[in-house]
Image (cartoon, rainbow, N blue to C red):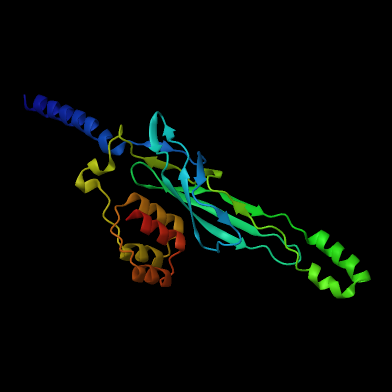
Amino acid sequence: MLARRVVAFGLALGFSLHCVVPAWAAGRRLPDGTRIAVRVMEQLSSASVKDGNPVNFAVVEDVVVDGEVVIKQGTPVRGVIVEAAAKRRMGRAGRLSYTVNETKAVDKSVVRLRAVQDKKGDSNVTSTAVTTTAVAVFVPVAAPFFLLRQGKDIVVAEGTRVDTFVDGEHVIATEAAGPVAAAPAAMRAAKLTNSDVLALHQAGFGEEVILAKIAASSAAFTVDATDLVALKKAGLSERVIATMVAAR
């Protein structure tokens, strides 16, 4: 009789765990390389932006995996100016390069993205050189003024569409799968602090490992101006710091 009760209890426990676990552990896998269309939220010009300036984008349409929305339309997307140079003398055109770095899924986790846009303006270097040479033969005094001719600046219009791609596989908790917050307390990740991130960095862990840990943990970061300066001086990359700011 006792043996039967033990077996029955085991079966009941197994059934209850089978029903409970999917409520917090299941999720939708967002594969590496998934294409996500974003649009530029502000006009960019090589004449005005500077290296390191943030660039704001937004997701163009819902990203759906197995019938579930994992990233909502309109979700903000973060990027950064990599290189910006205004048009210069002697017909040299402007240059503008920017990246698309990350967005957030419906469960608030960070989704890393990869995309680089490199724009070059029309250059008049050749025509300027020819014109200057020809004028120098007949009107030597006038030649230097033709060296002031400039190429064009790069302008990326607001609303410009950019195709980006998911960087690495991500598991997203959806409404159907149940929120991650529904996991038993003992199974939830401890809240990550500035000290925790600095400890990982000082232990020699790379940027990707630290970013993955931030994405998998609840955040308790302090990111006032003084905190950001301290994190930067401690050697954290701007990508990690930006992820900490976004995770609050």
